[in-house]
Structure formats: C-alpha cells, structure tokens
Image (cartoon, rainbow, N blue to C red):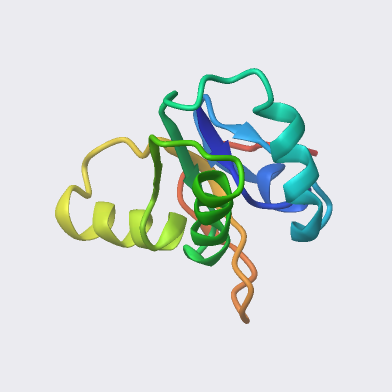
Length: 120
C-alpha cells in the first residue's frame, strides 16, 4: 500500500503512479480517513507513505505504528522534494515515477517534475 498523505489540491496536479490519495481537504482529516481505509488491512502489511517535504508522512507513519499498531510502515524521507532532488542529481535520465507537479508551500507553488497533465 502506498499512501499519498497530501491534500486533494496537491494530489490532483501530481502523484506517484499507483499511490492512493487520502482524499482530504486538510491534514487533520487524515486520522479518520486512515482508520477507515486500513481497518481490514493486516497489521504486518507493508505500508509506504509520502508527502511533499516529509513532515506529514512522519506524522502519519507515527500514527500508523503507535495508534493503529501497524508493524511494517515506511516513508519517503524528505518527501517528493527529496525524491526530485535525488533523481536530478543521481539519475537525471531516469523516468520519474512521480508524474506531474509537486505542489510546494513557498514562492514557487509548484515544481514540475514531468510534463504529465493531471487533474483539471
């Protein structure tokens, strides 16, 4: 299971292929969504989380292990920002698995990673 811990407006413009968005408008909605989404998932199922810069997926990963008692949780350290930086530095010819724009919360407002047009 790969969970996109970002909000709707972020997932609509860019995402990793096969990732499941939480479909939230704000981060505080995540806890109820996660409880419902994972209620029938075995506690040892592999779960990977990611977000824009790494903060939200740290919180979600802690919640999954500490509150929901999942035992096989990992996260994309540094989020999509770190993924993009690492890919550009170490494998610039490699096709990114993240498609579209990584919405960021600074003056840039978005970092185009691929030319894929997602959302409307």
